[in-house]
Length: 279
Image 1 (tube, rainbow, N blue to C red):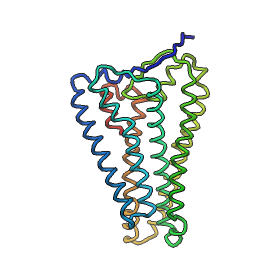
Image 2: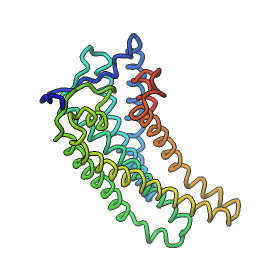
Image 3: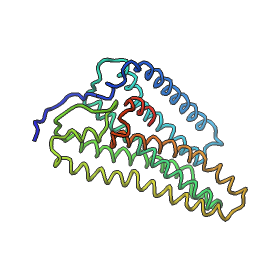
Image 4: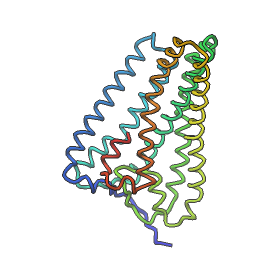
C-alpha cells in the first residue's frame, strides 16, 4: 500500500496542453458563458412573465434553463480563471464542491428530460385527460422532486469520496471529476463501496431516465403511425424542444465519457477543447 497524505489541494493537469492557445480558449469560453447566461436568463424571465407559457412543457424547460445556469457557473468561471493563471491548483473544499455541482447538474438534466418525455407522451396519447393529469401544481412538485433527489443522491456520493485516503492529488482534467479523484485512492479495497454505489447511481441517473424516454417515444411513434399526417406534424412540433435538448445533452455526455473513461480516442485533442465541446 502506498503512503497516504492529507492533501489540502488538487492539481489540475489538463491545462498543461493549452499552451499558446490559452488566450484563444479564454475568449471562446467567455463568449460561450456570457451567451449561456444571457440566453437562459432571458428565457426564464419570458416564461415567468408570460402567463400563456405557464404550461407543463415550458415549466419543465424553465427548470432546464435554471439548471444550465447552475451547471455552467460551476464550470466556466473556474476554467476562465485557470486559463489566464499560471497556478492550476484548487483547494480540496472547492474541488469537492465543483464535483457536487457538476454531477447534480447532469442528474437534474437527464431526470428533467425523462419527465419531459413522459409529459409529451401524456399530451399526445391522452390529450383529453392531459390537463387533469399534468396540473401546474403537479409539475412544480415533479421539478422539486427532481432537484431534491439529485442533491441527496450526490451528497452520499461525495461523502463516500471524501472519506477515501488519497495517495496523489493530480487530476488529469481541467475541472474536478469524481471518477478521477476516486482513482487516486491508496487502496482499491477502499473504493468498493464507491464502485457499488456508483453503479447504483448510474442505474438511477442514466438507465431509468433512458428507459422512460425510450418508452415514451415508442408509444408516441406507435400513435403517430396510426394517425393522419396533420397529427404527425403536430406531434413532431410538440416534441421538437425536448428532442433538441436531449440530443444536445447526449452529445456532451458522449464526449465526456470518451474523455473520462477512454483516454486514447481523445489523446490528440487538447483537454480544454474537448471540455468546451462536451458542455
